[in-house]
Length: 230
Image (tube, rainbow, N blue to C red; front, top):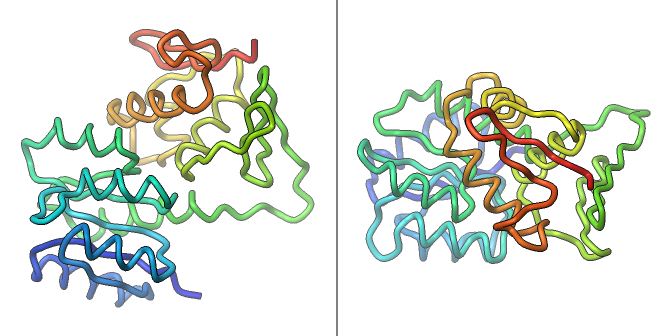
């Protein structure tokens, strides 16, 4: 079955450019001109990935991302213009998985699309041994891709899950920024420290009793992050 990508942009030429290139490579597409249209589509149709412009009338990409994350775990790639660094970070904080700065090449966009869809739809090899990790009241089931805290399910996006999984699997070790980015986002990443800061903030809000004084997800300043079971 083909993956469906929702393209959200108020500029018809860019929307059509992305659509044609995705459809030529076997993807199905849906189109929206603003955030409200995007939310309407998400509420009525199955979508595997959202590609969304940051600056749009009616509802911008940041607010649309926030509203999507209230209900859906669908991966989101944000498209931004140069000079919108603060807005990029805000989009990541709201739950975006990745961003691309305009102008971008179609090869770069397709690489990001494929990487995100791989994370969202992992394939476990037959006979793979069950992986379970515990840290206090946190339990991660790698095969079921579920995390619970005090027995209650924690809603994590695919990227959030992969980041927590990698850190818990390597509990007690300091993982450098570059290493963690390449392990979770892919080998072409390495300098996007803002991704990690945003995701660490969000994970702490979900798994820590006191996100400002974390017990498990610890920062090694200037180096990376470390996960402690106790």
